[in-house]
Image (tube, rainbow, N blue to C red):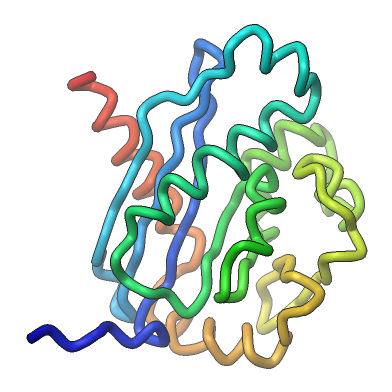
Length: 191
């Protein structure tokens, strides 16, 4: 008989890379407090068909990430997480489907924001929400012990800080995204 995992012991890191053929590859890495990987899942390249490109227009990236990639990745995870962290604003519309706090790291500025808002040093909440096609009223910006992130408006700032604090003592919260990108890249070599 296995003992269920304590969600307070694990963080999920959700990211996406755009492919050269206008598709997206998603990755989900779940780490324990020591920064050791517990689970990793990635998608095959997800492409829209021509009808979707026409119908979704500028909202296509958000649709593919929040309604196709994120649900697929999270459906396969077996380990509960205390919070889900992302570096991709395109996942913001997926946040309400989770029970755990959903956090978009802002410092250092994620590549998805740098690409969408070139030349911006410190993007405003409404600019970031525009990338993710979500209502700024649903989000709050948080500065906690030197890191800036966005959190759903209905999530508690003290709860998020309490969840992140023990992890931040041992791992840099931006580093797991490098692991995801490298693992996705490696998985594509055999494809």
